[in-house]
Image 1 (cartoon, rainbow, N blue to C red):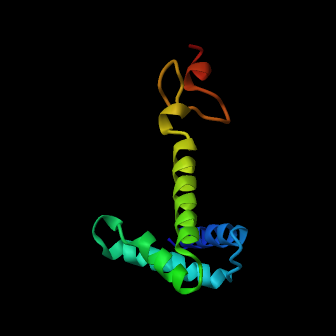
Image 2 (cartoon, rainbow, N blue to C red):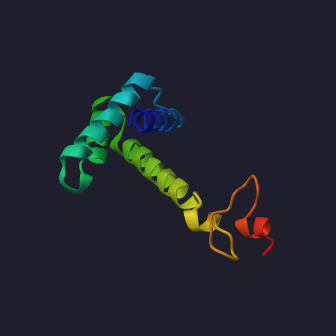
Length: 112
């Protein structure tokens, strides 16, 4: 959890800096923890991003920039999730068993 929140805070810091809002890392970490907490207590985890945008706007970040920040983080998260290989893509096409990067497939070891 701490790694996820810390990485989200660093992403927020970098995105907001590119938008012209140079905020300290601790402030961005506060936004991320706020979003994580509010998402945990609201139904369907729907309140985290609006809460983050609200607290950013209290720190003189326009709501449009806060929304863009949240959207870019969500898009990057989805792209990384889709780009990760599925367990099935790491299987041997002949037998369907797990592919071992060090030795190859069980089929090649058995002489099939």
